[in-house]
Length: 212
Image 1 (cartoon, rainbow, N blue to C red):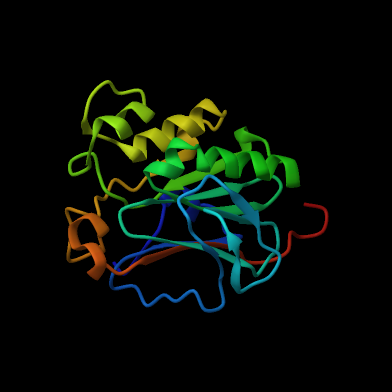
Image 2: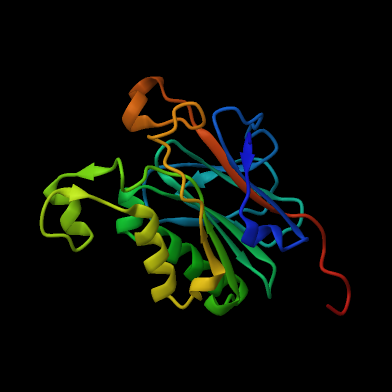
């Protein structure tokens, strides 16, 4: 498949979402985007296209505004507040994950829109898997590990969201490794400067009906 989706988020008829692959016919033209800097900074998008600013999570409550991130080994995380109808797209590499970027996005959703963690559905998309991701001791220690070795960033984002109060059954993991699957995914660690970027996005399709 050229664009992957989360079965969990597919249950919500008022949003559109997708995780891009190297074959996906996706462009950020017409989408709100970020100058991604491997931070834990979330920004709010009020308009439907162009770079909103410097950060690594983008959220909106506006129907028709598509928020998006680019990845190539880092993990795209999509957050959906089912009660207040707020969505977020998060870029979570090791630096962002160490800083709790998905949690910071959730906290910004709470401040701006009243989001409660128990109302969140979250989907962690494809990224470099624990099968292929080895880090040095300095990075490993940022995640509570005592020595260099394998790092499971998908599970770390899962743990952080659960610690913040998102129910486990409301979080899906794509389980696809970008490094392992060159035919389907770009990988910066595998291809370095020749690696492209994949676009992941989420959009509120329409206004909430009156009285609902």
